[in-house]
Length: 438
Image 1 (cartoon, helix red, strand yellow):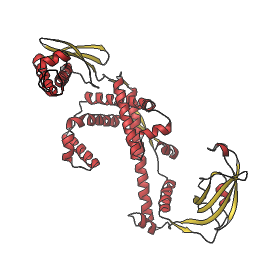
Image 2: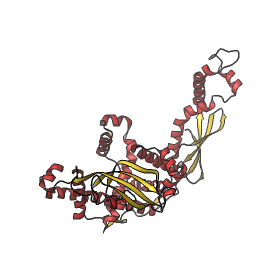
Image 3: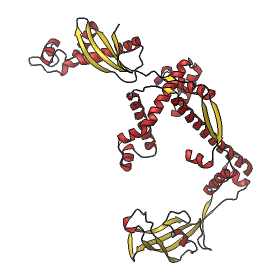
Image 4: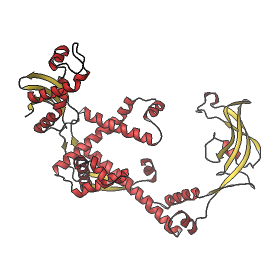
């Protein structure tokens, strides 16, 4: 047996003394010597021809030791871990201890998965916030689709109104002097959008195409340019074009054009169903977050710092991936927010600690409930992975095994058990809170 002794110097830390048999170690040293001798220069010998003992005498008796240990230790370490019934959560710290006629002794300091205590997880009380779909919500979605299907037409016979898109040339002056950044040509401005200085758009309303006029405004006190804060300004305007969004009639023909439905009533019902489905998913996600918090509250564990650090790095990688998908980068984000990578890690730390604790609790529940995963569940998971990456199932199975999937599937099943056994109270949620939750 490779395991010589086990001790526990502190909570979740174990020290294993592992013996590498002399025959195995000597064979590994010979293998390292044969691999390395061609790169070692020894006076009096052609390169690659120096005897092992000569090299050891010249460079030290342990010249091949560390690499030889690295070669044979992994298999012996796995045997020792299995014999000690440990579940490491990080790579071990390895130190040389001694060598004698029996072999080499090394010490492995192992951070073990902590033991967690979970309270009564069946019958957890949780709140599910539900939201009803109103006619106003349906109206808003229909209005948005109607807007996307409208056509912009040029207005010739009337003055500009709120909601119109105007094309203007403008130049701004403060104390009679044009200021930097205050000039634009063929600028498209939607009246009523609030995209210009307060009071600007209101003074464009009522003017017709071809008119030239002044707009008098004052820059806000909190304006970003120091030289313009609170200053009165005059903008010289030329109104070059007025455009109006012509919306399609809200009738059955509109429904046929924008959907697979024949009537407006059917189309509205389909929108209502989609909103209801979105609300239900949001409500269910909220319920699950509530249950996760409850699980964390009833669990007690001392989490090794390395587990939290690993989870934090996982959060950082996920965040970096999201930034990349939006055409940004982590370096750019840190630059423009004036923060550091270490500060970002600190932001993720509380969520990471909760995530680790919740997972440990679910693993414990899976063990208590003796949860097993059926082969059909594995097959379904392989199909989902294949579909998400656009590859066939056999290709997935070449790189992912049942053993790799099993831990996640067990915790997922454990959470379903907790959720199904929970005492859930439904409460109505306002539209405002639903929007903020999204």
